[in-house]
Length: 115
Image (tube, rainbow, N blue to C red; front, top):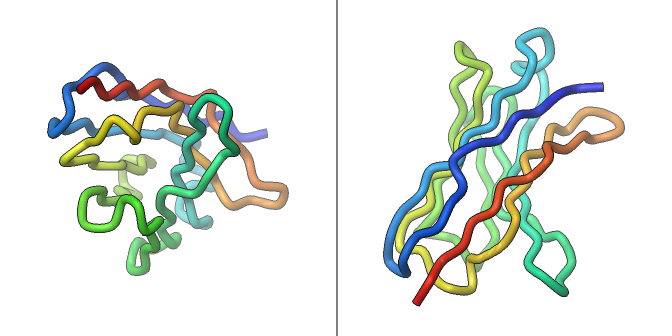
């Protein structure tokens, strides 16, 4: 069982920015791809962004392309999600995910964007 610890959520006005962080145990962090997902009330959990183990390849949901950036610092065992130009519809609980088998999840951090 991997313990993923997310931080950085909060309340922000539309157009603002937040940076989420997710720390994972060092022994496995550098081996696996990692991702950020989100779930808004009444909706299914959806992919936001994924980054490969070495950080060279990323993938984004169409809804966040050009606004969000996923990155990782393997020396700090941390993956980040920089969120700019936030919209009200970005409001959700954001979850960190590590692509172990089976994949594992953090506890989630709330992001609320007000108009």
